[in-house]
Length: 361
Image (cartoon, rainbow, N blue to C red; front, side, top):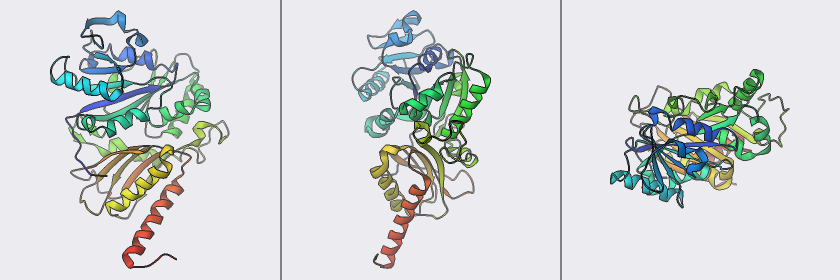
């Protein structure tokens, strides 16, 4: 993995995901009408799915329409990567109105990982777009049963940076509180928000990424939110859910935790550890975020991965505080902290033995 500098002038991308019937389309419908979305491009599967026809102001062409709010809506034609390349190129040529934010809607059954892989893997996109965050909608009435039955719904909530609980006007207060507690166990660092009929201030959902547009800096502490994992006992590790910790439930297989490394390690050792994890257990690593203290750099290195794919590591200009420990957040499925830490310990011992000339028995 080659280190890089984050392109802070690249376009932030937010992914909106959520299971069928969870209110994702309603949320998006309200968002694109909001005045603060006037410089946003929204990539969707079909215009008709969000009832966009009644809100049209101008049709730029067959694939792009301009809303009264100024928000652009574009349908996915072919591969997502082609759509994103086309949008950027047409923006540069001034063939479509300018935009400074991109929102991508997934289908109701979609695992958001392939979209995140697209942003991390394509060289053209990597230099022009950056992931801001994942927004997941969950149904206050049905979410618990849906997550018990469908792993896709669990993964959507587990990898999210923001979770919007819909239909809170229809659910009992106790049921909403229980759902929020469940979601905090599943994904401790995600911001939880309630919305009725998709009514929510867009400012609560965006700017969840490493780059903070208000301070114009890279805010790694806000991005990692490691304190949320320190306060949480860990999903699947005595979290006390009322369903009795049934390991056959999809959401009981998800764990979220932060691994701290006191020792300053060489970059190749850290990289080997992460590559080994993703090679053998990539399907079970839903998301990884980390700030590393490596021997080759006086400033921290930030890593971000989804399953088998890692974004090129980013070297920061300075430490955010006096704490020099490496901090790595893992959201996994059936992959406990002990396995992750033991794999690093084994690599460290092997490297130490090689340097000392010892031959393993």
